[in-house]
Length: 309
Image (tube, rainbow, N blue to C red; front, side):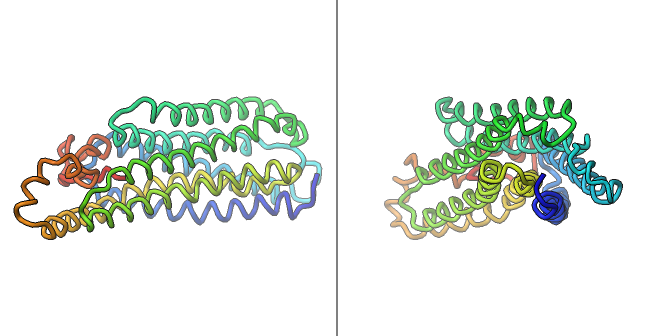
């Protein structure tokens, strides 16, 4: 086994970083429930499920660290053995990823006009990652040491490769859909640019973290460096979801201002013609996404839900 710095030290750093991000996700969840009390119960259930999985995961990895560094202090043999908590946490990390990626996949389905060719590849990546992760975790439950776990290095690499690929594909498709929504309105196009940046940023950190997990598993297989990023991945998923939901009102206000200013820039005789044009129903009008955000369709107080991200 490698040195303590690259094994338990890496796990220690991962737990601390995950704990910090857990605090951020708790704050975001509190803001969500106070800011959007009229969201559909399904969306609230999703947020609650993600937060609950986040909480259990944080508890499991914190216990694992305590077990290795405190309970088994002075017992070097114990450092080579796997505690049940270090395996069970994989299940909950996988649940978080499935919930959040499914949410973004549903948005792609709506924004793409329900085109199967656009959504099916994303679904296959998301489900593939979940199934492979479940398989890995179930097999790991019957392993006693980390050396035994090394026999499933192929599964470990596959899990992280699918996670990185899924996040990148989701971000690319969202940006492509937004980019195709551009119109002749200069203010609206500026808003589209901001939405693209927001869509990239919400998926960028998870993509980078999943990629780093994949790279460190391949390059440093005898260390726990990859565990640092794996612990953090679930927190980044939950925070990307909450950031997306909590940004809706701000983006809604921006879209209203942009549409109003863009129409004022047009000549009166051109405005009537533009009103019937297809592009005036660009993503910024934000009516379709109510099906996911649970506001317009489900009787919420806000009648202009954001669909663009």
